[in-house]
Image 1 (cartoon, rainbow, N blue to C red):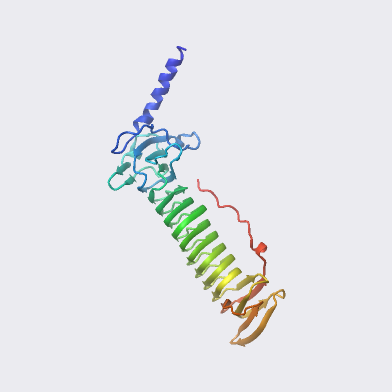
Image 2: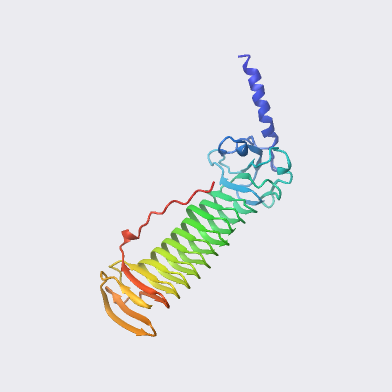
Length: 388
């Protein structure tokens, strides 16, 4: 038994640097050591070892403010280990400088304002390759801003307001539920995995791309400048999705949806509700499964409209050429030609008492009306790449 004593002393000595990194709020010190962060740092390389750690006692309902030039990761506390939800854990790891207490953390501030219930993590000069991991109460509001190539990763939070701003860094939101989700990017990707639940306002400038699995809310507003905008499922009362030059690719959309792209193409795998889509130079390809009113317009591109054979609707189609699949049984057809433009008016199945229309017009392109069933509209997308 005697040889174990030197080993225990050695282990305690190795724990001292971690304990020295601990900090606490204005309340009494918590009973949990700082190194008991409810997370696992990946790997064992020096870049992943913690440089410094903090534990703070906070209100379960508050706000996290982060302004850093490095990578930031936020996730909720383990409710089993911390049922009162009154802790915040902050861990700094990685970086390229070898000294853990060198200039990397010289201006690094971790503070909690108890009266404002605001947790602040601020720095201008921390190594850009560092990662700051924060575990907060699940109901904490988030206001996170990174500079340079700093990325942001948010996992499984539930709050009133979630605000993220990056420059060239990527943003990954996984299973986020918030009344308001506000995301800005200027070059980095915006990726949503799982369900993003709430009113969304997402804007991606430059070459930033947007990839979202599932959106659910009252209002959704997503805008890109020159990057692809892609969603798999969209459930909202009202949605506006737009891009100046990027393509827009939507999976299954529900509600009143407006899609606009000046130079890009628009693809909609399935629309259930009212749909308005317009583009200047791009093409439009849309499957309309159930509808209110559908209005598709392009100046120079072709338009492809796909419908199930059982759909009850009126058609108003206009283009330099109109091609209708022989599988579709159109009734009341009226054709006209004027100034090189052909127009077809018709209806399909029983439209008595219905004001349901599919209107498609293109100035320089062709119109194609095709039949497609619901099963054919299902597409298995490749999962979005995980941001590490």
